[in-house]
Image (cartoon, rainbow, N blue to C red; front, top):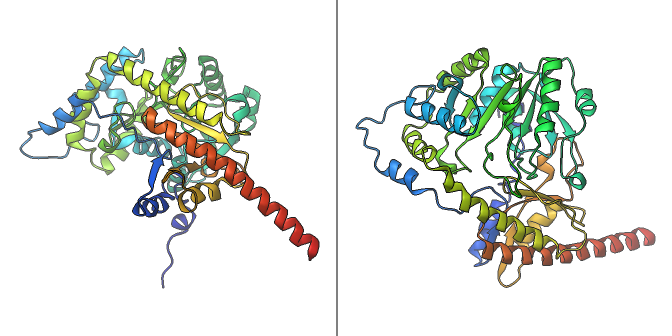
Length: 412
């Protein structure tokens, strides 16, 4: 029998999705499962987007241009200018979601065996994209105790090697909820210019900042025209994850020409969804005001719930809608599965994402989970009460097992 490829063997299962079969089985038993594992907003996709798709009347559903439809590229350019990000239509390529945009960036700047510096924990799918692209992610660890902020310039520079081609950041950050200040981006720009590297900036959560903070784009940093590649998506901004419309953008003409070749190789992005995306982009920015207020309430609900579980370590996230939580247990992977197979309270349980898959360094994240606060407040309150109970109970189970193991060893 022929073997599958080494690439396929090494591809990790998604920590966000791999426990879903256990959740399905729990639901079959009539158990309510609160999903805190995935960034799928429960806020309705805006009516203008849905109406635009519903009323799309092109008689032939044809391929769109590889760059994207003119009407959408121009709408994106206008949106970026509103956000003080100077991008002309020719600096933008529409992609099939933000994931494809990251692929295009990787493929455009790296050869197999090259390295991209990332800051762990990071969006777990970067791992899969790097493996498929034949590149290595070189991780620099950030820590919950200091809010997962970026380390000093000299620490980052130590990771730069002859194979380093770029630095990848997500700002605001998935999975940590950290918003990087302008000074941190200026430090990255200094490193990029000094070592002739690219900064790939995943900015899909641009609008989602709290506590009076504001997002700074890598393209707002002086001198980055030739070094910055912006990744974007409508998925979270307009609660339109299934539309699969993203963007790769840069003022570097060589990079955009390379990305265009990859765009042509896959032909085009979805045509109907591009028309819907345009409708969303053209909405008044005031759309986001109540949305952000709602997400801040959800964040505060999560933090209040975590406070009920002694020994939990996490800083208050200031962006996106995620938080990495360090638990007072040993094995978060086992805990996450146990929640779905053994734990139930008031005929309910929760689904979380074990955080080890958000790291490259072996052994890290083993006692951490990622929580996505995309449920309405009433559901989040119930979910967090369940989670707090479960953490306390599972800690006692682990402690009991440790005592039994020691007793067994002593009697051996």
